[in-house]
Amino acid sequence: MTFPLCSSGNYRYFFESDDDYTGFNVYVLPPGVSGGEFAAGNGKYYTSCEKLNMIRTSNTCNVLLGASIYLKNTSSYQAITLEGEITSLDDPPWPDMDWDDSARQYTESDMNYYRSVFR
Image (cartoon, rainbow, N blue to C red; front, side, top):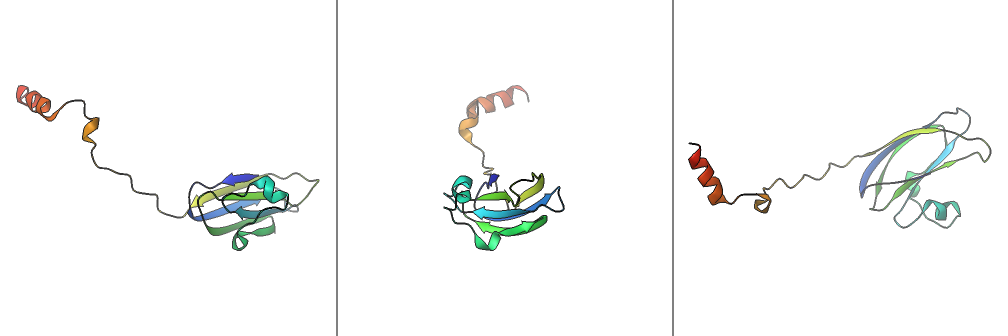
């Protein structure tokens, strides 16, 4: 399974298997590396972010835009179910709160007229 990350920055991930005996590997892939490409042995990964043969794990990783998390079952014959969470640790960008005058339906002179009518 591959999970794309939304942007560049610091992420924390947590994953846990439903099986106490069958583990999984976690790899964080850089931009441009697909899960299929990596599974075929043709892709790089962030070595500081990998976790191998885990039943339960968490880690943090600083990535570039376009990165993804790749999860691999360590067993070729036993299926597992994983539960997990991926969280961005960076503050979200602050929205532009400036008023857009072009969004107004009425001109300022119209508004002055309506204010004068209801005074």
